[in-house]
Amino acid sequence: MGVTIFLMDDGVFVKKGQEPVDGLRELDMATKFKELMEMGIEVVICGTCQKARGLQEAELIEGVKLGSMMDMAKSVKGSKATLTF
Image 1 (cartoon, helix red, strand yellow):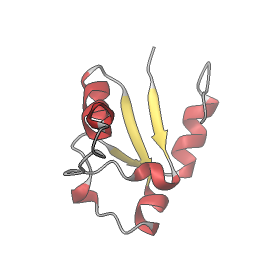
Image 2 (cartoon, rainbow, N blue to C red):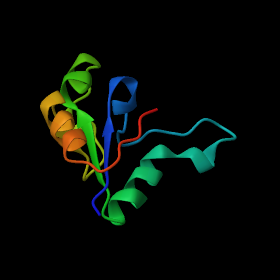
Image 3 (cartoon, helix red, strand yellow):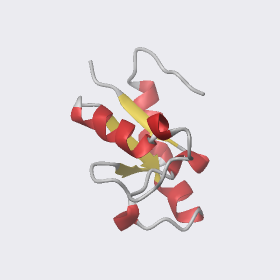
């Protein structure tokens, strides 16, 4: 079973060099996403959202893919289950 995480809006800030908020080191999202990708989970960010927020592709964590709304729609359509939050 393949799992894809598709990040949109401000969720696209999955970039290198981010420092977690003091007291919340366990919520280091860059590390968490790297661990998920090592487990075979695909992490995709909305390219339109990324561009709108001024993020450069080179800033993204290695392994994170750029996608489009069409990619997200295809993923949802082909899925047995979809979670949103």
